[in-house]
Length: 149
Picture (spheres, rainbow, N blue to C red):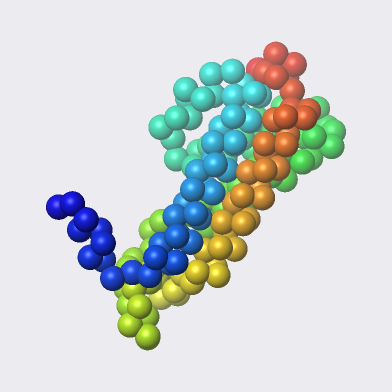
């Protein structure tokens, strides 16, 4: 029913941190897909319905086709970070709702509680990595025709 979401007894600051972390990861993943497309035409279509892990693996594979350079090292580091962040995002998205010792609704993964500070920290990390990928797109990342793709 309309407004039933408002009956969930969860702190708006908590859901705001959660939402921003999820949104930041979506931006990171989209920048990774755009980098894949730049390196190999047709990647957007091929990756649209794939998991974030598959996107990360594809980006890592494609970064190996770039000639050694500072840009290649930058995108490879960002792609490696993105690959690691897939696990972090999965831990957040597959967490289970529960109640903490103070009676507040929270998410838990393997017995550990996701705090607002932790969600803010991962949102920052996701955002920073996404910005590094975006910088590669804007500055020097070669197009697929120059990498043999």
